[in-house]
Image 1 (cartoon, rainbow, N blue to C red):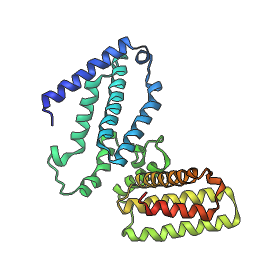
Image 2 (image 1 turned 180 degrees about the vertical axis):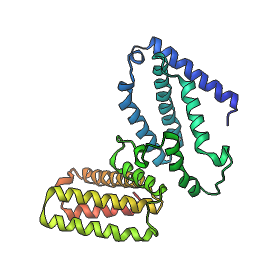
Image 3 (image 1 turned 30 degrees about the vertical axis):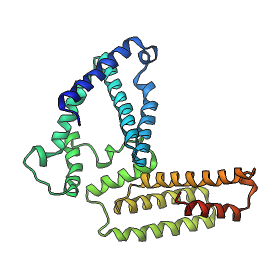
Image 4 (image 1 turned 45 degrees about the horizontal axis):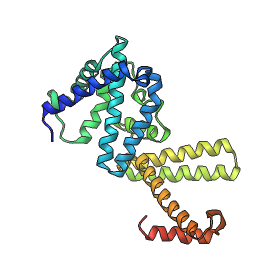
Length: 261
Protein backbone atom coordinates (compact mmCIF):
# COMPACT_ATOMS: atom_id res chain seq x y z
CA UNK A 1 0.00 0.00 0.00
CA UNK A 2 1.05 3.57 -0.58
CA UNK A 3 2.34 5.97 2.05
CA UNK A 4 0.36 9.01 3.21
CA UNK A 5 2.76 11.24 1.25
CA UNK A 6 2.14 9.25 -1.95
CA UNK A 7 -1.61 9.48 -1.42
CA UNK A 8 -1.48 13.24 -0.92
CA UNK A 9 0.73 13.61 -4.01
CA UNK A 10 -1.75 11.62 -6.11
CA UNK A 11 -4.68 13.71 -4.84
CA UNK A 12 -2.77 16.93 -5.54
CA UNK A 13 -2.02 15.76 -9.08
CA UNK A 14 -5.72 15.02 -9.61
CA UNK A 15 -6.60 18.57 -8.54
CA UNK A 16 -3.99 19.99 -10.92
CA UNK A 17 -5.34 17.90 -13.82
CA UNK A 18 -8.87 19.10 -13.07
CA UNK A 19 -7.70 22.73 -13.11
CA UNK A 20 -6.05 22.22 -16.49
CA UNK A 21 -9.00 20.37 -18.00
CA UNK A 22 -11.34 23.13 -16.89
CA UNK A 23 -9.18 25.66 -18.71
CA UNK A 24 -8.22 23.80 -21.89
CA UNK A 25 -10.70 21.00 -22.71
CA UNK A 26 -13.73 22.26 -24.72
CA UNK A 27 -16.00 19.62 -23.16
CA UNK A 28 -14.88 20.14 -19.56
CA UNK A 29 -15.08 23.93 -19.88
CA UNK A 30 -18.81 23.97 -20.63
CA UNK A 31 -19.93 21.47 -17.97
CA UNK A 32 -22.23 22.58 -15.14
CA UNK A 33 -23.67 20.90 -12.05
CA UNK A 34 -26.83 20.22 -14.05
CA UNK A 35 -25.06 18.74 -17.08
CA UNK A 36 -22.93 16.45 -14.90
CA UNK A 37 -25.79 15.14 -12.76
CA UNK A 38 -26.99 12.31 -15.02
CA UNK A 39 -23.41 11.22 -15.69
CA UNK A 40 -22.78 11.12 -11.94
CA UNK A 41 -25.79 8.86 -11.43
CA UNK A 42 -24.50 6.56 -14.20
CA UNK A 43 -21.03 6.41 -12.63
CA UNK A 44 -22.45 5.49 -9.22
CA UNK A 45 -24.51 2.68 -10.76
CA UNK A 46 -21.43 1.39 -12.59
CA UNK A 47 -19.58 1.35 -9.28
CA UNK A 48 -22.47 -0.58 -7.71
CA UNK A 49 -22.35 -3.11 -10.54
CA UNK A 50 -18.62 -3.63 -10.02
CA UNK A 51 -19.22 -4.13 -6.29
CA UNK A 52 -21.92 -6.73 -6.94
CA UNK A 53 -19.53 -8.56 -9.30
CA UNK A 54 -16.78 -8.31 -6.65
CA UNK A 55 -14.39 -7.17 -9.40
CA UNK A 56 -11.63 -5.23 -7.61
CA UNK A 57 -10.11 -3.84 -10.81
CA UNK A 58 -13.48 -2.48 -11.91
CA UNK A 59 -14.21 -1.16 -8.40
CA UNK A 60 -10.90 0.75 -8.50
CA UNK A 61 -11.73 2.17 -11.94
CA UNK A 62 -15.28 3.18 -11.05
CA UNK A 63 -14.19 4.73 -7.73
CA UNK A 64 -11.86 6.91 -9.79
CA UNK A 65 -14.75 7.99 -12.01
CA UNK A 66 -16.90 8.86 -8.99
CA UNK A 67 -13.99 10.74 -7.38
CA UNK A 68 -13.53 12.70 -10.60
CA UNK A 69 -17.10 13.90 -10.32
CA UNK A 70 -16.59 14.95 -6.70
CA UNK A 71 -13.53 16.97 -7.77
CA UNK A 72 -15.45 18.40 -10.74
CA UNK A 73 -18.35 19.66 -8.61
CA UNK A 74 -15.89 21.16 -6.12
CA UNK A 75 -14.07 22.93 -8.97
CA UNK A 76 -17.33 24.41 -10.24
CA UNK A 77 -18.15 25.49 -6.70
CA UNK A 78 -14.80 27.26 -6.37
CA UNK A 79 -15.34 29.08 -9.67
CA UNK A 80 -18.62 30.41 -8.31
CA UNK A 81 -16.94 31.44 -5.08
CA UNK A 82 -19.28 29.15 -3.15
CA UNK A 83 -16.88 26.45 -1.86
CA UNK A 84 -13.84 24.43 -2.90
CA UNK A 85 -12.50 20.94 -2.24
CA UNK A 86 -11.01 22.07 1.08
CA UNK A 87 -14.45 23.16 2.27
CA UNK A 88 -15.88 19.82 1.15
CA UNK A 89 -13.24 17.87 3.09
CA UNK A 90 -13.52 20.08 6.17
CA UNK A 91 -17.31 19.77 6.24
CA UNK A 92 -17.03 15.98 5.91
CA UNK A 93 -14.44 15.76 8.71
CA UNK A 94 -16.64 17.88 10.97
CA UNK A 95 -19.66 15.66 10.26
CA UNK A 96 -17.75 12.43 10.84
CA UNK A 97 -16.41 13.65 14.16
CA UNK A 98 -19.84 14.85 15.28
CA UNK A 99 -21.56 11.60 14.28
CA UNK A 100 -18.99 9.40 16.04
CA UNK A 101 -18.93 10.56 19.67
CA UNK A 102 -17.98 7.00 20.66
CA UNK A 103 -14.70 7.49 18.77
CA UNK A 104 -13.95 11.21 19.08
CA UNK A 105 -15.93 12.00 22.24
CA UNK A 106 -16.73 10.54 25.61
CA UNK A 107 -19.60 8.23 24.64
CA UNK A 108 -19.12 4.50 24.15
CA UNK A 109 -20.45 1.86 21.76
CA UNK A 110 -19.47 -1.79 21.66
CA UNK A 111 -21.32 -2.89 18.51
CA UNK A 112 -22.41 -1.62 15.11
CA UNK A 113 -26.03 -1.98 16.24
CA UNK A 114 -25.46 0.43 19.13
CA UNK A 115 -23.90 2.95 16.75
CA UNK A 116 -26.80 2.72 14.30
CA UNK A 117 -29.32 3.12 17.10
CA UNK A 118 -27.94 6.53 18.05
CA UNK A 119 -27.28 7.85 14.55
CA UNK A 120 -30.79 9.14 13.80
CA UNK A 121 -30.91 11.17 17.00
CA UNK A 122 -27.43 12.53 16.25
CA UNK A 123 -28.49 13.49 12.72
CA UNK A 124 -31.63 15.23 13.98
CA UNK A 125 -29.57 17.18 16.48
CA UNK A 126 -27.07 18.07 13.78
CA UNK A 127 -29.72 19.32 11.33
CA UNK A 128 -31.86 21.14 13.92
CA UNK A 129 -34.93 20.24 15.98
CA UNK A 130 -37.41 21.09 13.24
CA UNK A 131 -36.28 18.19 11.04
CA UNK A 132 -38.18 14.89 10.93
CA UNK A 133 -36.70 11.40 10.96
CA UNK A 134 -37.64 10.63 7.35
CA UNK A 135 -36.69 14.02 5.95
CA UNK A 136 -33.18 12.75 5.35
CA UNK A 137 -34.35 10.22 2.74
CA UNK A 138 -33.70 11.76 -0.71
CA UNK A 139 -36.84 11.98 -2.85
CA UNK A 140 -34.72 11.22 -5.92
CA UNK A 141 -33.78 7.73 -4.67
CA UNK A 142 -35.19 4.86 -6.76
CA UNK A 143 -38.22 3.28 -5.10
CA UNK A 144 -36.57 0.05 -3.93
CA UNK A 145 -33.58 1.53 -2.06
CA UNK A 146 -35.83 4.36 -0.86
CA UNK A 147 -38.20 1.86 0.80
CA UNK A 148 -35.23 0.19 2.47
CA UNK A 149 -33.86 3.53 3.70
CA UNK A 150 -37.26 4.65 5.02
CA UNK A 151 -37.64 1.45 7.02
CA UNK A 152 -34.07 1.63 8.30
CA UNK A 153 -34.58 5.17 9.56
CA UNK A 154 -37.88 4.21 11.20
CA UNK A 155 -36.09 1.30 12.91
CA UNK A 156 -33.39 3.59 14.28
CA UNK A 157 -36.18 5.65 15.87
CA UNK A 158 -37.61 2.59 17.62
CA UNK A 159 -40.43 1.76 15.18
CA UNK A 160 -39.81 -1.87 14.28
CA UNK A 161 -40.99 -5.44 14.80
CA UNK A 162 -40.31 -7.03 18.18
CA UNK A 163 -39.40 -10.30 16.44
CA UNK A 164 -38.27 -10.42 12.82
CA UNK A 165 -40.31 -13.58 12.23
CA UNK A 166 -43.50 -11.54 12.73
CA UNK A 167 -42.93 -9.74 9.44
CA UNK A 168 -44.05 -12.81 7.48
CA UNK A 169 -47.59 -12.44 8.80
CA UNK A 170 -47.57 -8.95 7.28
CA UNK A 171 -46.24 -10.28 3.98
CA UNK A 172 -49.02 -12.90 3.89
CA UNK A 173 -51.62 -10.27 4.77
CA UNK A 174 -50.48 -7.98 1.95
CA UNK A 175 -50.39 -10.89 -0.51
CA UNK A 176 -53.97 -11.80 0.43
CA UNK A 177 -55.13 -8.22 -0.09
CA UNK A 178 -53.44 -8.19 -3.51
CA UNK A 179 -55.18 -11.42 -4.50
CA UNK A 180 -58.53 -9.91 -3.55
CA UNK A 181 -57.95 -6.86 -5.74
CA UNK A 182 -56.77 -9.04 -8.62
CA UNK A 183 -60.07 -10.93 -8.36
CA UNK A 184 -61.94 -7.62 -8.48
CA UNK A 185 -59.60 -6.39 -11.23
CA UNK A 186 -59.46 -2.83 -9.97
CA UNK A 187 -56.22 -1.64 -11.58
CA UNK A 188 -55.62 1.29 -9.23
CA UNK A 189 -56.12 -0.85 -6.11
CA UNK A 190 -54.06 -3.68 -7.62
CA UNK A 191 -51.16 -1.28 -8.08
CA UNK A 192 -51.54 -0.01 -4.51
CA UNK A 193 -51.54 -3.55 -3.11
CA UNK A 194 -48.54 -4.53 -5.22
CA UNK A 195 -46.76 -1.57 -3.63
CA UNK A 196 -47.76 -2.69 -0.14
CA UNK A 197 -46.53 -6.22 -0.88
CA UNK A 198 -43.20 -4.96 -2.21
CA UNK A 199 -42.80 -2.71 0.83
CA UNK A 200 -43.42 -5.60 3.22
CA UNK A 201 -40.91 -7.79 1.34
CA UNK A 202 -38.32 -5.03 1.55
CA UNK A 203 -39.04 -4.90 5.28
CA UNK A 204 -38.47 -8.65 5.54
CA UNK A 205 -35.19 -8.37 3.64
CA UNK A 206 -34.01 -5.63 6.00
CA UNK A 207 -34.87 -7.66 9.08
CA UNK A 208 -32.82 -10.59 7.77
CA UNK A 209 -29.84 -8.40 6.87
CA UNK A 210 -30.39 -8.59 3.11
CA UNK A 211 -30.05 -5.56 0.84
CA UNK A 212 -33.12 -5.89 -1.43
CA UNK A 213 -31.58 -3.89 -4.26
CA UNK A 214 -28.48 -6.10 -4.32
CA UNK A 215 -30.64 -9.22 -4.08
CA UNK A 216 -32.83 -8.17 -7.01
CA UNK A 217 -29.83 -7.15 -9.12
CA UNK A 218 -28.19 -10.53 -8.52
CA UNK A 219 -31.38 -12.17 -9.77
CA UNK A 220 -31.44 -9.81 -12.78
CA UNK A 221 -27.89 -10.86 -13.69
CA UNK A 222 -28.69 -14.53 -13.15
CA UNK A 223 -31.72 -14.28 -15.44
CA UNK A 224 -29.64 -12.52 -18.10
CA UNK A 225 -26.99 -15.27 -18.02
CA UNK A 226 -29.55 -18.06 -18.30
CA UNK A 227 -31.61 -16.35 -20.98
CA UNK A 228 -28.48 -15.62 -23.02
CA UNK A 229 -27.56 -19.30 -22.72
CA UNK A 230 -30.99 -20.33 -24.03
CA UNK A 231 -30.77 -17.86 -26.90
CA UNK A 232 -27.30 -19.10 -27.89
CA UNK A 233 -28.45 -22.73 -27.84
CA UNK A 234 -31.48 -21.89 -29.96
CA UNK A 235 -29.41 -19.84 -32.43
CA UNK A 236 -26.99 -22.74 -32.92
CA UNK A 237 -29.86 -24.63 -34.55
CA UNK A 238 -30.90 -21.69 -36.69
CA UNK A 239 -34.04 -21.00 -34.66
CA UNK A 240 -35.34 -18.13 -32.56
CA UNK A 241 -36.65 -18.13 -29.00
CA UNK A 242 -40.19 -17.45 -30.17
CA UNK A 243 -40.10 -20.55 -32.42
CA UNK A 244 -39.80 -22.96 -29.47
CA UNK A 245 -42.56 -24.24 -27.23
CA UNK A 246 -42.67 -23.33 -23.56
CA UNK A 247 -41.77 -26.93 -22.70
CA UNK A 248 -38.65 -26.76 -24.89
CA UNK A 249 -37.63 -23.44 -23.36
CA UNK A 250 -38.15 -24.84 -19.86
CA UNK A 251 -35.81 -27.68 -20.76
CA UNK A 252 -33.11 -25.25 -21.90
CA UNK A 253 -33.65 -23.16 -18.76
CA UNK A 254 -33.12 -26.23 -16.56
CA UNK A 255 -30.00 -27.05 -18.57
CA UNK A 256 -28.68 -23.53 -17.92
CA UNK A 257 -29.35 -23.93 -14.19
CA UNK A 258 -27.54 -27.27 -14.06
CA UNK A 259 -24.54 -25.74 -15.85
CA UNK A 260 -24.13 -23.35 -12.92
CA UNK A 261 -25.35 -20.18 -14.65
